Image (cartoon, rainbow, N blue to C red; front, side):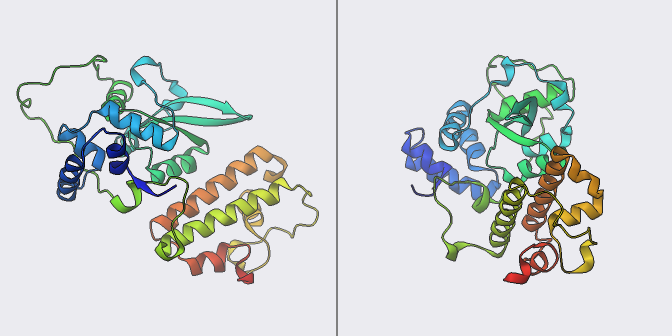
Amino acid sequence: MARKRIGELLVERGAITPEQLEAGLTAQRQTRQRLGVTLIGQGAITEATLAQALSEALGMPQVDLAAITPDWAAVHLLRARFCEQHDLFPYALETVAGKRQLVVAMADPLNITAIEEIEFTSGLKVSGRVTALSAVRGAILRYYHKVPVATGPRPAPARPPARAAPVPARPAVVEDDEEVIVGEELPAAEKTQRTSLADLIREREEQAKRKRGGGGGTADKPKARAPASGGGGGVLDDLDYLFGQAAREEPDRMEELERRFWALMRIMARKGLLTNEEFRRELDDEGGEG
């Protein structure tokens, strides 16, 4: 299947016309808001239609935040400011295959940066749900700021209320975040330095998982070394050095530390704080092999 963007998916479903899409893209270039928010502001589409399109395209369930009671243990895992910045709301903890996951309602489920930061800071895998932007913001006001929020539909005011602050437009990286990848990776020629490094990091993470799952104990492992030594062991030995070899005796704890380590690597790569050369020289277990 081909690579598609949100706008294309909405046109294919008959939710908007090609003319409405073109008008939305023109306005988006000026406002720097995400296309979905722009189309809603223009009255071309409703929040419900947008959420349905995202849910179908990504295969991600929807959630009605107004119909649930959040788990405070989940809410307290994230700060209000982070939730406001990324338009998301953590509302539950669930156990899948014996492992805990944080269930997060997201107006923008394509925000991979936010997902990885949550997984890094919480140590939990994120299980995403699609929801409307107004529902997320209402939940943040209600549960973080203790502001009563009406749950039913409200008629639009005849004019904007006095002193109403405009919704801040987040800097949007449209090229990275607006696409929905449907069963196909970027051709190699389109890969940038950062996406190439991100691919390398994910490849090494999968290799580390396979090694860990292969068993074999630790008898043949070298002793823990300092990460700056420039050779020898790999990620497990670096974690031994940081947290003590006793961590290996607790598989769940070791898996959590490894997950945080790899999430941190991806965040650094995306922010341009880590280069391919640095990763291969200092952190890549197979860097000396090419």
